[in-house]
Amino acid sequence: MQDAPDVVVLGGREPSTADEMARLAKLSGLDVPVARYSFWKGDRANPDLTRDVAAFARRNPAHVIAKSIGSLIVMLALRDHGVRTRAALFLGVPVKRLRYENRIDLLSDHCRSTPTSILQRRDDPTGSFADLARALGRSELIRLHELPGDTHDYADEDAAALVRTWWAGLAAGWPC
Image 1: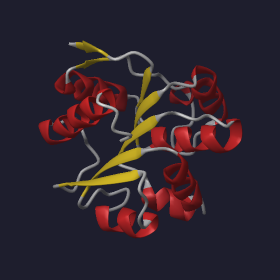
Image 2: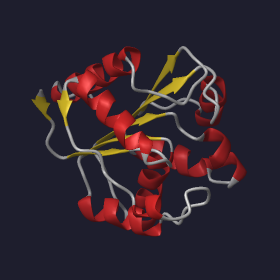
Image 3: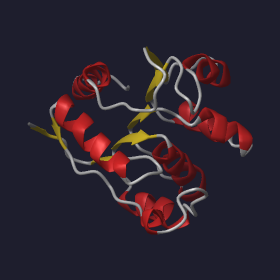
Image 4: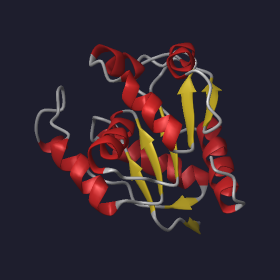
């Protein structure tokens, strides 16, 4: 496997997403650990992200791969702590949650300042690809990739192929 220095991998709201992200990394050929969240021990329905945002900010990685609520943690670290990753890869962005919490601007702000590739299933239950595309508009720093399906699971070969392309592009100097 390819060692991936200075990359943080963040899962989603449920502890099982750590396994999902580990499978995705393995399928992608990356040897990277998946971060654990402090809120996994408590209220996962409406977690307090403060400690996990601060932990991510202290790490301040060059690259991040984040699923769902992990992408929210990255966006909050940018807003609240000035974290600037060189490139991000988001999977299953929780568009519905961001809209409900009036935080869609976090996603727009992140994507205007950080080269970001986003993999979103056509009918992801947390927000469809079409919803995501409408929310973001156009930017030179964004690459949107629509994957087939209606699940919030991203540990498959389609997603892994895009992760491999993203990582190879970074190595070649491509911003996202």
